[in-house]
Amino acid sequence: MEYSVERQISFALENEPGVLARVCAALRERRINIHALSIVDNVEQGMVRLVTSDPTTAVEVIRTLGLYPIQADVIDLRPASIIGKLGEISRALADAGVNIDYAYGSEMGSGNRMSLILRVSPMDAAQAVLNALPAT
Image (cartoon, rainbow, N blue to C red; front, side):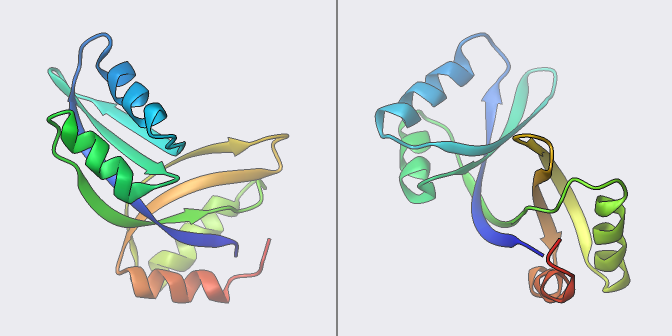
């Protein structure tokens, strides 16, 4: 199974127009690309999760904006976009006692692959499961 372990940055952001644009502009100024993004809203703020091209610098940039980033390792999974594939993967992880704490992603390009970010625990058990799965 094609995957990599990436550093995710999470932070709370006020739920107001222009606030995300300010973060994105600051990252752009430092030439940091956002590879994956999730925003879950709340009444007054949202929880932003990012996987970037340069997590160390991204954390510095986010801190200069007065925000408080938290980092975590996540799995960037690239399974084939086949009906039932996510079910197979989640079943294999569950059978090994791995919890999927949360996930976000989307289909890539022409629709033949997905990009799926998984926060799992325990990470080492998840990697063992993914290493044992076929490369599709």
